[in-house]
Image 1: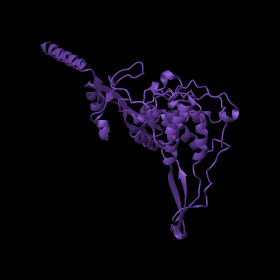
Image 2 (image 1 turned 90 degrees about the horizontal axis):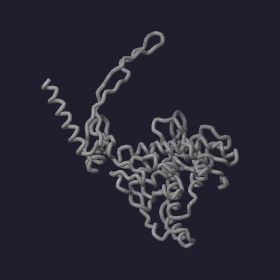
Image 3 (image 1 turned 30 degrees about the vertical axis):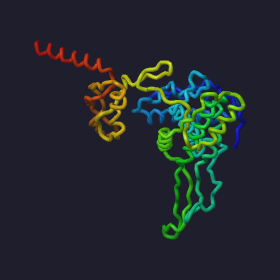
Image 4 (image 1 turned 135 degrees about the vertical axis):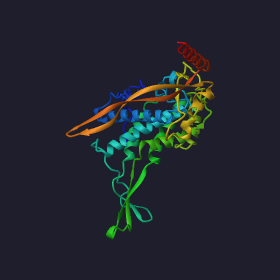
Length: 356
């Protein structure tokens, strides 16, 4: 299914996500035919899911998917070309495709249903295609029209963004999971029918995070302008790279330090993890990565939390809980001088208490 590229999209594109907020992403606003407006809520929800996954994947890294980075804009002042930008484009594109595909399977669109194009064909030894596969072809086609239409440039950065948008869509297709049902006498599995289903979106995020670590740098910034010759050279270069791989043009800046021009806050004031059950090695090393390696000290802070506990069911029909208080320890990255001053103040306060 091919939609015309003349869909009216407002390219004031700000994918602003507020954690803990139910506000939808407001940048995919359409002014085109009503026939296309039926996809708008799915597109917005998909972009939002991409943002949330980005924040999850980078929660304990120096670059933690800040809101300024989530702007898929063609404005020159916002168009960095780092591997982080590559991930933002890929995960946003994947989120839109994933949500459109899922909503198709849920019956939200009248013009979309199961992908049964291969049903009855032999898929492998002992199994045939059958059942109701999620229609990723539909999700791919519609998402491509919406997301790629946001990129109006024709230079190397535009080519990079479009390549990474496609890598995001490839990630959804590449993580599809085969589900099978056995057939045969008395429960025997002499033959199987199989279909493809979407995985949890976290699987797509994990897949793209691995691609992020192995992103390919393309040196095209110098001399890669908008002339026909330059555009041809850019297209040839990107066509030689697998569509499954993320690409970037620039090295990442130092995310340890604040850079207001780039909208980077640095790691000072960031929380990190040191102790706790079920922490991964990566999480346990976050204080070293965010604080120590960035020339900052780790400050321990204690705080009291209140939560419901000892809940009991009373007949009939109410649940009553007590309010329990618990002291928790958290760790933050601060300047070394601040830690020394805070320690000196605590020692002075302790001496004064002893005197009195």
